[in-house]
Amino acid sequence: MKQLIIILTVFVVFIHNAFSQKITVYDSYVPSQKETEKPKLRNFFAINPLGLFVGDYPLYYERNIAGPFNIMVSGGVTSKNSLYDIMQNGDLFGVNSNYDNNFNRSADMGYSYMIQPKIYLRERYFNGIYLGMEYRFRHYNYESTTYDDPNYGTVSVGNVKEYREVADIKFNCGWAYNMGSGVTIDFYVGVGTRTNRYHYAEYNTVNNNGSGTIFINPTQPTSSNSYQIDYATLTKGTVTLGTGFRIGYAF
Image (cartoon, rainbow, N blue to C red; front, side, top):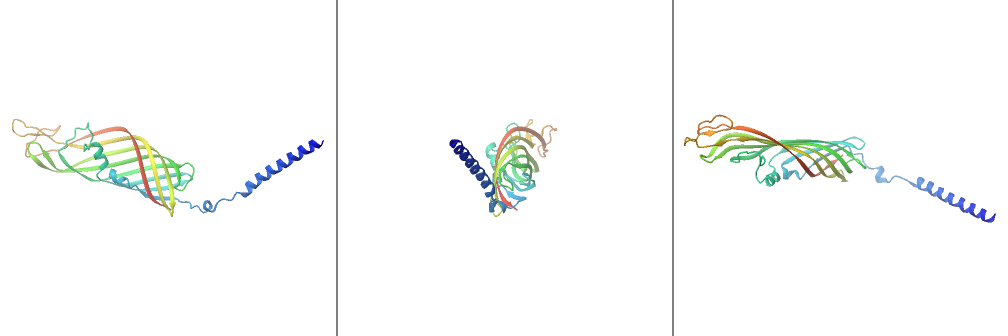
């Protein structure tokens, strides 16, 4: 009997302590001041400093739609893509385009835009890890006013307009961090598909029995003291990997 009383006493004390600890933990939970005062940011404007290397200068705007769901859009201008020129070794329209590199091209202003729905996995208000599906379009313009004719030297060709279009569809994974006072940074990586569309000029010269006839494919030959520019379009698709960095202000 004495042993039973001791066992029951120990059991009651154990249950009482366990219950008290549970109640104590529950009752002692108080949200931190930082959490209760965390601002519910809805808007985010940003730029991408790395755009300097690809000749793309967009302004980004991200808006919180509901809960963890955001949407980001951008619009901007394009110019000379230095990184692309290095990677292509000056072959602006791809190795299989058969474009004529005797045109003295210079980069002209183009445009770009992007749209990306995003979902933040844990935190919100432009903080934490997120997933997004991005569509980005870039239009690069080129202009030539002269052509280095192998037979007749540099020839004026007026204003020859060419362009390269890049359309990306990518799945992105990123991480955003609010550094305080609204200053926010955003890193991301992505994988997807890329479609390049090239629109370039054709101007081929041959010596026809010494008469210097200029042939512009696929048009009829014209005399050597005039010229005609024809255009060709080429589309190529590939897999693309991307990364980026944005910095801006959230409010």
